[in-house]
Length: 354
Image 1 (tube, helix red, strand yellow):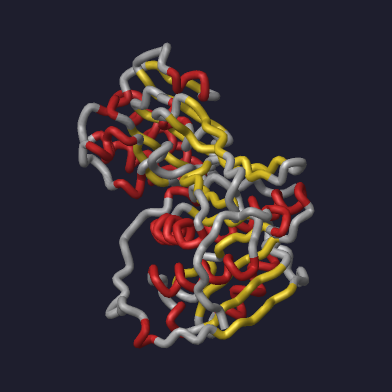
Image 2 (image 1 turned 30 degrees about the horizontal axis):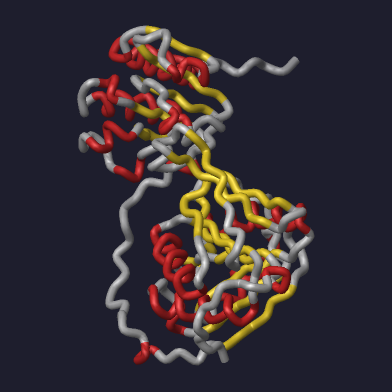
């Protein structure tokens, strides 16, 4: 069905067409990042007029996922079916996708910069002899020149580099998870599903899946309320205080990079350029200076409250409300006030209707 071919430079870029995204799936379901790629892909497709094609490698469960992708904005899904694709493994995925790209010549190919996406993207780029811009925070298209404008922070976040791939195709980029919000699902939306049966046999795959051990990881990217702590807390125990506040608010605790590096909290809770991007309705920054590496991950929050001893800290300019003072005085008082307000609501007698 799909054969490997040697990669060659794209001497005829005008013959490359369409926007491809990788529809990453886990546990027989499309991952959230796949829906995020569908969102940015839809935007680029509408701007450029090129078709948005989702590439799905899965077992027999892929049929439902393909329909779901279309309802999230994809025009066409190429569903490559084989039991070996149930769980991600580097070589069958990279070989199949690399061959498909060489055969069909997409102009653009975008993947989520997840653990699997990072592994896959680089191997595909080598196979098809093109470049890739990794971990992008912005992606756009110059329609006139048909060039992908892949933007990512550089020099420690001091600048935003706009990287182009002029000579080779496809133009590839991996996008940081959490940056692009999925579109609203459109039930009943119509699109094309192309079904391909892969001929790869399990015995041909070098790596074997013996057991899947779920990783206990907190997803801070979907939280409506985030209480984030920095080194200004001074000690690991300060996060227990933030946990109490988050519990009262129905939110989740996160951190800037320094507390993570210090071992005060796990890396899955890190917000920032090298961590995760969050879009909460409420973001409370406690003891965080607000360096660009951190604000890159939270500046799209709807409402920001900062608690800091320094009235000139950069985080202040991102804040709707800034509380200047000792976090160990302000946070417990805030927690107690919220707890009391909730209790008052519970005990308040309903007003009788007249």
